[in-house]
Image (cartoon, rainbow, N blue to C red):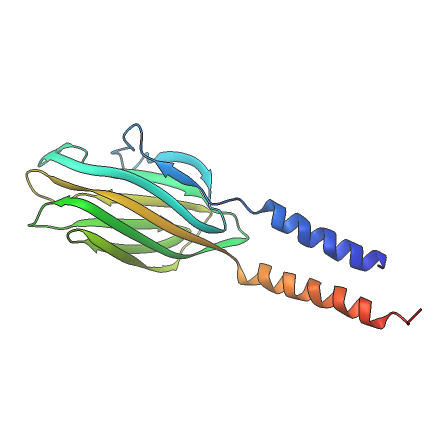
Length: 178
């Protein structure tokens, strides 16, 4: 194998090793109720399905768990292909709950009852993803939730892998038979 081929293979292996594994976070201590100071989950988006589970439940109109605010980091070499929220134990009616996504991606969805809800995403800016979960606006209401955030390699990273594989293959095909 030529020096160039070895360099390409090593750079591909290094890029794969730099990707984080998917994370799974379960709310132990209540996530922040402050939109200006979300809980830092201290995790990095991984390639695959990342999960965040918890409960948001309002004890009264402005009491109890009025929202869950949290954030995590996304590497520049990754993108978020989808976010899905699955709810159970839903209680509330008048104004539904919601999930709002800001930062590296932007999106929102309304949570009406138990079930699974997909978030329509558009590109944002930066490498931090901030999530706000708001329970239904009633005297008392809320739900259990599981967020599934799917991380994928950026298209440019995939193109680099394809190009690297092509160079390795081409170098092997150019060798004269021994």
